[in-house]
Length: 79
Image (cartoon, rainbow, N blue to C red; front, side, top):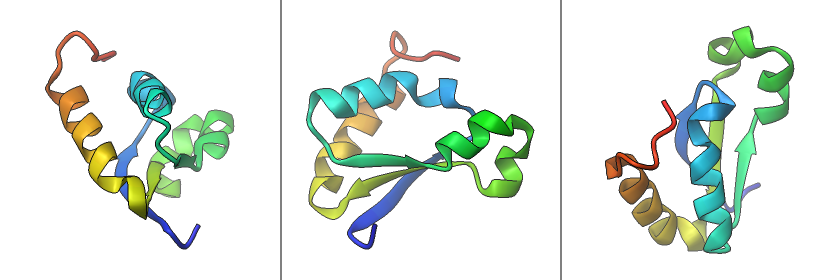
């Protein structure tokens, strides 16, 4: 985990479902930290610090491009 940096924080798993698929398609090394804990205790998301998207340092530029495109795309938004 020492070579992974947090790029984004989400409250609920549904907020990043499409983003996960986009990252996996590009073989970007990533982890959604606290995902399991929040799926068990969803109302504790803010107290736990949310679900943190952590990306390997070498993949950060590629991941940032994907995140930016995902945020600017209206047809990929879930909520």
